[in-house]
Image (cartoon, one colour):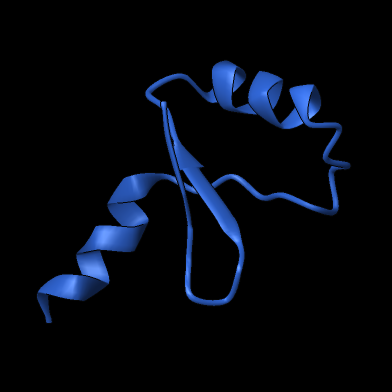
Amino acid sequence: MYGLYDTEGILRFTCSDKEACIAYAKLFEFSSIEFSLMPLSDLTEGDNN
C-alpha cells in the first residue's frame, strides 16, 4: 500500500485489494463521505491524451 498527500492536501492511497483500502480508511476512522474508491485505470487513461 502506498499513500501520498496531493497538492490539495488530500490523502490518496492505493492498494491492489479493495477490501484492504476500506480497512485502511476504517483504521483512521474516515467516514464514508471522507473517501471514495476509484480504479487506477480510470486515473491513467486520461493522462495519455
